[in-house]
Image 1 (spheres, rainbow over the protein chains, first blue to last red):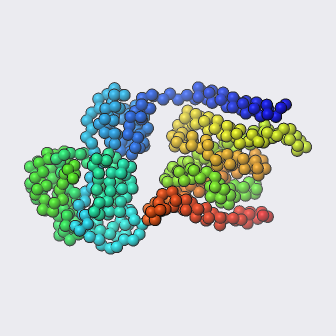
Image 2 (cartoon, rainbow over the protein chains, first blue to last red):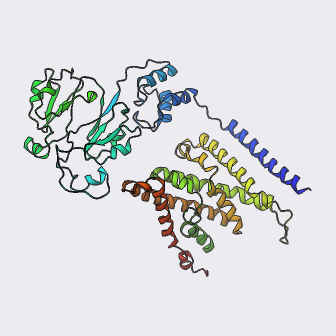
Length: 266
Length: 207
């Protein structure tokens, strides 16, 4: 037989056999996929951040359709995304307050100092492993930018020695909070008036004062000033219950160290 | 038996496909960022390598270059090797994906993303073709493919560790990102050169 003809026949036959097998396989091994899953995946933010608690956006879409997961868990997508998903699923979106990262530390350069000069691998994780960090305060932001590297949205940067959140860009996915070895970052519902204590120091007042000029010393002034009893002081550290807080901001005025701020207005 | 062991360990340490033959660099650089995805990718590669070898060896031997009992070829279609093998591997991977989706959803979920990536991976084609070039019989080819897959796994796992260190270190601005990764890959590859001849010595095979 003509070798060229034979080559053509051979490849064509192999191709055809393969095609038949694949077609047969796709018919016999067909797995029904709910078309809503694909639609929802397209609507979601696509950051695969895991804020919803699922392994990626596709997984969340699947859990909405198959397990009846809530439709408003996509933090990066926000309310607009929740509304679209709700429309696809034919349910009510419910309210979803935007969540933003808050760095609970006010120890910028000049307010606190260094215990030693660190020259190892430049990451918070590494410096934390060496005598609990190089800062005088062992609770505060280490300032080596693990959060900056974790952020998929370029929304958190080290400014003046501590992490600063770009509130426009932040989607509240929590990636930065997860990598911070000091757990300084928390994800808080964004509110124009409700303040947050921007300090994590659990040492006694005098010790805190020695370490940092902008640290919570546990003086209880804010707790006494609060008309709604939303502030509790535990381990010499004030904490504001965001549910009880009405946003009067008396505590902001009262704080002698100036560590209570409204993050939304920063 | 000794020959099979020699082939297997040679593929892992001495003739490592990524670090000595420089095939499959794309997934090596692309998927080695995280340990778990590196392992997932390598397992999928191993799986497809063995399967592809099992499918392409008979095709080459009985269809493309069938031999008469006296050793002469009935016809020689050897030049079609590349195109036919790619066709076969693509079909195979697609079939495998359908099969896993239907019958082993758990495995499909863990390999899911990596399977389609493998279709056009040069290591797979490399293993199948080099097996034939080396004149291995069927069993030897399968063992060689498995060894190549495990070698890929070793390279990926080692390199994902190296990479973690590299990413945390301070690199000069001009080396940031891919350049320093390539330098690290080169050093890892150099370290594997140290395994040269070790297998022959262990199994007492005359070089």
